[in-house]
Image (tube, rainbow, N blue to C red):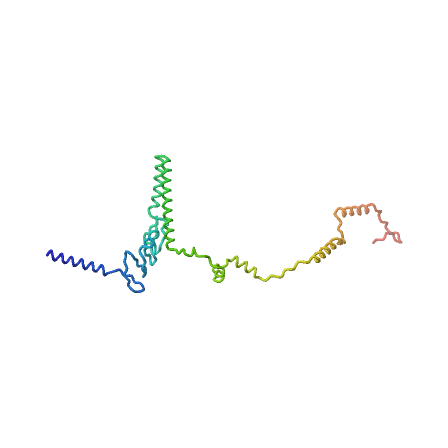
Length: 257
């Protein structure tokens, strides 16, 4: 009986092992099932991707492959983990208890400062700031490393394009300011009057001098003082002149005008 049970268990284990070898995970690529190793590859929306690329673990988020080291998937959208206190809860990103912990640490430092003195608080604050700065520097380095791995920087070291290539392919389109200046320069303008010759300039100057020297105003306006003096003289003459004699008529009565 014991031998029969051992034989059955051995056969069962052999079958399970054979089934594990023959069975595989299938990823439907272009409508055809393709077997892949789950530890080495990942199926994301009908395409196979390496599980680890450039030292970063890859994951699938609604058909988008992202690096789980500095990114996270929340409700089918990939977010950058620029703030480590972000956490996906029910499809939305929320703050974790890190912010509350920072507030509690500030309260604890205030209490310790009142009890143990300000020197301990200064040392603790300096240590806390140094730790936060180190975390921020590490996070920034990880983000930059993730961006640099997925970018193609070969064009940065390529030689600049030639003049003919820039002109023919319109590689650098003109700015609005350049278009405005070009439009103004292309507008037709009236021809400029050429400057006079030397003899013509001398003749123009001579005529101008003659017109200025020979010009004399005909009617000169009297000044205020002269007009006032003239009017006073006229009034004095009228006052000193004798009265007019009335001419009498033949009948001895004065004639009325």
